[in-house]
Image (tube, rainbow, N blue to C red; front, side, top):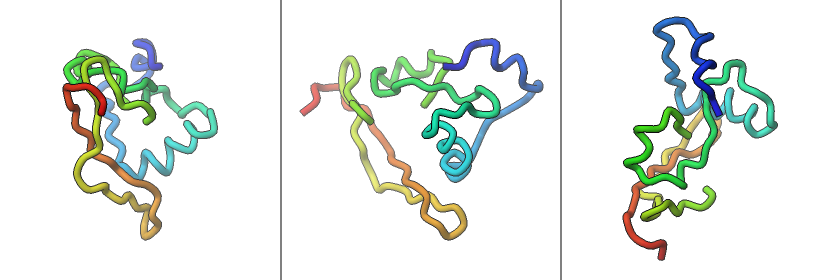
Length: 103
């Protein structure tokens, strides 16, 4: 998890807006092999344990079990393919929160 002090090492005005391709090609391999990212700017936590209205108050963002306290996250829509050049490297899913018991 990222602590408050990690952002103190970043320059003023720093914004982190990686593309889907950059996340998969440059950051996910470090995560998958338990290597640290160059800068601790990507926190790790289980988003599925929270209801959607709890997320904005958290200073952290990132299948497990999609059940939350008062409902569950369900995949919806069409999956989006992620490419690096012409090579397929991953998929992006859209999720909706349903406030009811898991079927």
